[in-house]
Structures are given as structure tokens and as C-alpha cells.
Image 1 (cartoon, helix red, strand yellow):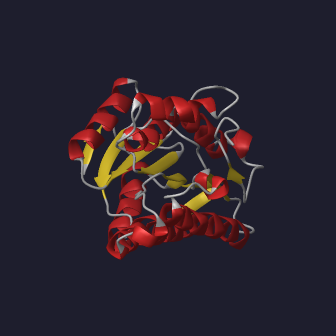
Image 2: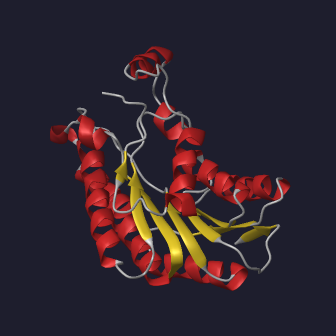
Length: 251
């Protein structure tokens, strides 16, 4: 665990898995700007996680980095305990950690399917389970799906199947938390300019994807972080049990 600008105190507290890069990192920064103390969860890149914490601290926020494999229930439970011991509790959980593998169904290595299942399905379940146990009233769990679930793009079969499971889990948990004053929603981004998305794509491929949206661009991590911040805020608390397809109307 690495800490910067972090001390116990009152106020809202957020855990962001996958918080060292991309949409997770931008969401952590955005929530910190709204006054949340933030636990930046990361899988392995400590330097990136430390960078996210320092960025938040430099802007006057409070943050700490905690390493946790999201599919490991003991590591995730320890991350929630760290949030409680350092900041007093948990109000928002943003589960942005995920894995992607692209292949035609006929060609996919089943070991890759198992790895996808472990991170995207088991990992989401483990994080959601801890969120269900520990989120305070007025809190929010925000999971991540993908707009590809609806677009049915070839080579995304395994990834889309894993995210379809995330959507189903999200809808059910929203109803199971009746009486807790906790919301559960999924954000389903379209093409977004993260390192994970851009890897292996040339300029022409990105331009073709950008042209599919009436807004004629791909999304940015900041675009998605704004949706996360709304769902995490009191202003978004009437939105519950939904999949928000933040994709610029890509079809």
C-alpha cells in the first residue's frame, strides 16, 4: 500500500478498481475533485498507481493505492478494510478493472476465456459482494460493461459474454439491496481513447470508429468519468438498476 495526502476523516470515500490507468484513473481523479477520499486499486503496476495517487494529492485530494487482484476475495476484503481503517468507511465503489481478448469464437484459446471469466465475471462478483456488505447508505456501486454487448461486433464474443454477465449481476444486485439506500448501475462505454483500446489500432481504424458516432469522435476517459461522477453523486441517486451506454450514439 502506498499513501499520499491520506488521513482518516469524515466525508465520502470511494474505491476505484483499475484506478491506475485509463477510465479508472480518470474516474479516481474526478471523484477526488468532488471531495471523495479515494482508494486506488491496482493489479500490478505500482508506479502507475503511485502516479495516480500523487496526481490526486497534488490537486489537494486524499488518496492511497492498494494492490489487489479483484478475483481474490481475501485481497478485495483487505482493500475494503483499508478504506475503512484509513478513511472511515466506503460510500462509492467504481469497478473499472477488466480484461479483454479479441478472437473469433472458433479460434479462441480456452485458457484466455478462463482468464477473462476470472477477471471480468468472478472479479466483478467479488467486488460487488464486498460492496453489498459494506457500502453506507446513500452510496453507489458502479460496474463496467461495454456497448459492444449491444453492437454484436465479431471477435468480441468472449469479452461481450463476460460483460453481459456483469450487466445481469448489476441488475439483480440493485434489487437485492432494497432498503439500503444504495444504487447499483453499470456504465457501458463505446470506443474510448485508452491505452487498452488503442493498442494495435492504426489511425485509419480509429478514424473509422470515430465516424460511426454522430458526434464524429471516439470517447475520452474524461467523458466516461463524468458519467461515473454523476452516478456516484446525490444528483444521480435516482438512477438505479440501469446500464448507461455512454457511446456518443455509435451504431
